[in-house]
Amino acid sequence: MSTNVTKTLSGEDLFKNVISHAKEYGYIFPSSEIYDGLSAVYDYGQYGAELKKNIREYWWKSMVQMHENIVGIDSAIFMHPTTWKASGHVDAFNDPLIDNKDSKKRYRADVLIEDHVSKILAKADKEIAKARERFGEAFDENQYKATNARVKEYLDKAEEINTRFKNALEENDLAEVKQIIEDLEIVCPVSGSKNWTDVRQFNLMFSTEMGSTAEGASTIYLRPETAQGIFVNFLNVQKTGRMKIPFGIAQTGKAFRNEIVARQFIFRMREFEQMEMQFFVRPGEEMTWYNHWKETRMKWHLSLGLGKTKYRFHDHLKLAHYANAACDIEFEFPFGFKELEGIHSRTDFDLKAHEQHSGKKLQYFDPELNQSYVPYVVETSVGLDRMFLAVMSSAYKEEQLEDGSSRVVLSFPPILAPIKAAVMPLTKKDGLPEKAREILDNLKFEFNCQYDEKDAIGKRYRRQDAIGTPFCITVDHQTLEDNTVTIRYRDTMIQERIAIALLRDLIANEVSLRKLLS
Ligand code: ATP
Image 1 (cartoon, rainbow, N blue to C red):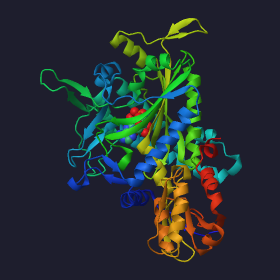
Image 2 (image 1 turned 90 degrees about the vertical axis):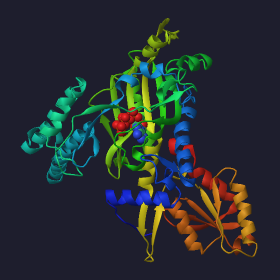
Image 3 (image 1 turned 120 degrees about the vertical axis):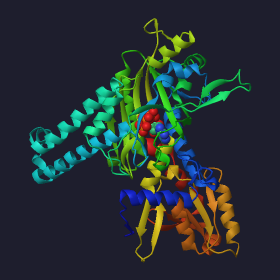
Image 4 (image 1 turned 180 degrees about the vertical axis):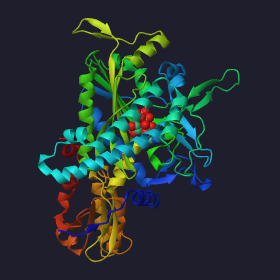
C-alpha cells in the first residue's frame, strides 16, 4: 500500500493551481490568447475536449440510453425571435447590477446580498458545529437553533434579509435593493467603500442580425438556454416518436449570456454549454416528478465518486416567472458551494406561452384520461463547463511520495479520463516499440490510448499522472517471452504483471457505464 501524502490546498491556492495546470497540460486555454484573450470566454485544448466529451457522453447515456421514455435532439442555436418574447427572456431575463464608484467594479446586486447572508449563516453553522462536538450523541440541532440566543439571532437576521430581498425583487423595487445593500453596510471587496450607484436591470441576451440588407434584416438572439429548442419541438418529437406522457426530451449544446460579472474561470462564462432534459408530465403530477428528478440527478452526481459531502440542495428563494418549485444542486468548488445544476418545475408556462404566440396547439391527447391538455414540465439543467470544473478541481492533487519526490495527479473517474491507457516500451530497441504498438493497435478500437517512448519510464509515468491517465502499460523484455506486461495504476501507483490478453477486459470494466450506474 502506498503511503503517499496528499498536500492539503486551501480554496484559493487550489483554484490557482488548477487553472495553471489546466493551461499547462492542454485542458483549457483563454480564448484568442494571442490577442490577450476575450473576457469570460475559454477554449478547450486537446485533453480538455476529450474530458468534456466524456462528461457529455456520460450524461447523455445516463439520461437517454438508460431511459426508455427519454429521447435526445439537437436544435439550432438561432431561433425565431418570437421564441424569446414568448419565453419571457426579452422582458425578464435580467440581472440587477450595481457599480462601485471608487473601484469602478461592477457587481450583481443579488450576489452581494446573497454572499452577505451566506456569511451570517456560516457563523451560525460554526456555533452549531461547536455545540455538536460539546454535546455529542445527545445533541438536538433543532432545539439548539430555537433556544441558543446567538444562533437564533444569526438565523433570524438571515431570514429577515432574505424576506426583505425577496419582496424587493418581486415588486421589482430596485431602490429598495440598493437600500438593503446600504443598510447591510456591504462594502466593495476591491475599494472597501460603500459608494454605490443605483441598481439597474441588465438583459443578458446577446443579439445579432439575420439577413443581408439593412431593411430586411431582423434582430435575432443567441439562445441563452437550450430548453426553448425542446419546447418548440415538443409536438414534432411527441408525434414522430409516438411518445406517451410522461416522457422526456434531452439536449446538450451551447448557450450564451452576457454575464455582468464573469470572474471565476469556466464557472461563469459568456459562451457555455448546457445539458438539459425537459420531462413532460400530467398536470397535477409535477411535484412527484420534481422530487423524482431531484433524487435521480443527485444519484447521478454521486455515482462519479467525487465525494458525498461536496453536494447539497439549495431551494430557490425567489421563483422564476415560470416555476412553481425550484432548487439547485450545489457543489463545493474551490471558492465554496455554488450552483452546479438547476431542477425546476416549470409548470405549463412555456408550452402555453408558445401556443399563445404561435397560434398553434401544443397539446397532448392522453388516451387513458381521454382528454387533451398542455403538459407540465420538470426540467433538469446542468452546465457542462461547471461539471468540468467540479471534476477537474476534485481530481487535482499534489502528493508527496515515499521516496521524497512529489507528483501532480488528476485522479479522474476512469470513465471520464481523456486518455484511458498509455502504452510504453521500456526502451526504444530490441523490438519493444513494435510490441508496444501492437498492443496499442489492439486497444485503440475501444479506448483512447497514447503511445509514449520518450524519456525515462518514471518521467513518463509522471506525465501520464498529470493528465490523469488511469493505466500505464509497460512493455519490457519479458513481454517478448511470455506476453505479459506491467500495468501501473494511477492512484495507488501499484504495479502488477498481467497477461496482454487480459488488458482489454480490465480496462473495459473500469470505464464501464454498468459499473457506475448499476
Ligand atoms: P447562476 O445563478 O449561477 O447565474 P442560473 O440559475 O442562471 O445560474 P440556469 O439558468 O438555471 O442558471 O442554468 C442552468 C445551468 O447552466 C446552471 O446550473 C449552470 O450549471 C449553467 N450555467 C448557467 N449560466 C452559466 C454561465 N454563465 N457559465 C457556465 N455555466 C452556466
